[in-house]
Image (cartoon, rainbow over all chains, first blue to last red; front, side):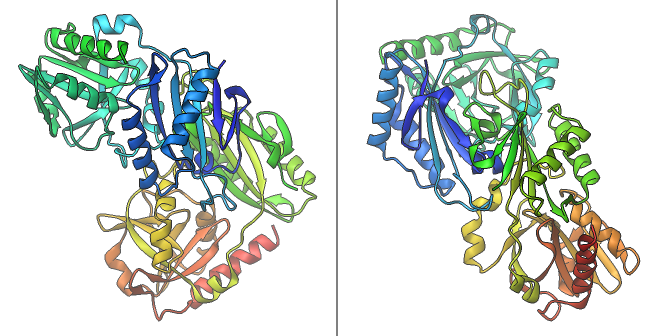
Length: 273
Length: 273
C-alpha cells in the first residue's frame, strides 16, 4: 500500500483528496518534483530539495515544511511502505482560494507511488521520438504544466514513437519529461537553456566527466545529422538511448556503446546508493 | 450552501474532493467554463455549452454528459441552492491516471459558487491595467492555465493596478481573464486573435451593433494613444471601463459615456433574462 502526506496528515494515498477550490486544479498553479529511492534512501536528496525549493520560490509559494521536516516525512513514508524502493512525488499548489484566483497558503502533497520502469526492450533497441515545435514556458521551473505532451499523445502513438523532442527555431531543448544528450566522439553535449535542469542529467554529466568532454550549450537541429549516439535522462528512464528522431536514424540505428557505458555507470551508482 | 456535481454525485461543494492522481492537479491538464445565472436561468447557456464542448474537443476529452443532461444538473443545482442567482464553474480534467500521464476517462465537476461582483467604485472610476509581454498558449481553449496572472499578482498590486493587459510584439490580445475593447468615435474595436472568445464579448458586440461600427481585428499598442475609451468584458466584470494602461491615461482619465451606455444595455439585457 502506498502512503502519502497532505498538509500534515499521513494516510494511504487513495484516502487523500484535494478540495475543489485548489488553485492547482482550478488554475494550473502548481509545481512538483519526483524522485526514486534506492536501498530505502532518497536518491540525490540534496539536489532534489534544492530544486523543489527553487521552483517554489520562482512561483512565490512559501514552503510549509523545512528540509529536515520534509526528510522526516519522506523517511516515515518509506517505513510505512515496508522500506521497499518507491517513487516520491511532491506536489505543491497555490492552495485553497477564497475567490478562485488569490493565494492564501499552499497545499503540499508528498505521495509515494509505484515505480513504472522503462520496458527492457527500450534499452535494447532505443526509442523513437518525434520533433515538436514547442518550448515550455518557464522550463526551468518544475511546474505542473504538461498539457503539451498529453495533447500530443495520439500524434506520438501514431508515429510509433515514445515521446516528443521539443525544438524552437531550430534549437533543441528537451523531451517532454526528460533531458537530451548527444555524443560525438569524446564529446557529450546537452542543451543548456529552455530546459528543466534534471537531476539525472546532472548525475550523468558528473559520471561522464572522466571519460568525456562534457559540453552544456545550445544544440541545433542541424547538428543531429552527424551524431553517433543520442539518449535521454530522467529518474525513471536513467540513460535511455534514442535511435530515431522523426525520420532521422541516429548513428547506425542501434544502441551505441557509449550510451550503454553511461547507463552501466549510472546503474552502479544507484546500486550502491 | 453551495452544491456541486462530481462524476455523477451531487453534494455540498465542501464535501466534494478530487483524488491525488487527477491529471488536472498533477499535470495541469484541465479545462473549465464559468457563467452566471440571472433570474434563476443560466445566462447564454447555448453559447457557453458550445464553447465548453469546443474546449473539450480541442483537448481530446470526451464529454461524459450531453447538453440536455448537463442542463438538468445545472437546474438541479440551482434548485438546491434555493433558486438564488449563482456562479457556475465547470471543470473537466484528464481524470485519474494510472501512470500520472495517460488519460483514462475525464473527471467532470460542476460547481456552484458565490458571485464575486466588481466593487462599484471600479465602475465609477474605471480600472488601471499594466501591460505584460505575454500571450496565452492555445488562448482560444479555456484551459485551466492561469499561472501567469497568479505569478504576476505582486507586480499588479505594486503598480496599483487590477489586472494585466497581454501584448506580444506590439499586438494586444486580452486581459488575464477578460476581453479588451477600445472605442474611437463610432468604432468599437476588439482583438480577434490570441484570445479566448468571451461570451460577454460576443453579447456586447451584438448589443453594440445598432449604435457602433464593430471591428474585430488585430489591435496594436500604438493605437492606444488616441482611443477615447477602453473597457474589458467578462461574466462578472460585464462592461468595466479601463481608464489607465500602464502610464498611459485613456481619454481624459474618466469613465466615458459610451462604455456607460454599453454597460446599461448589458444590465438591461440580464435584468430581463
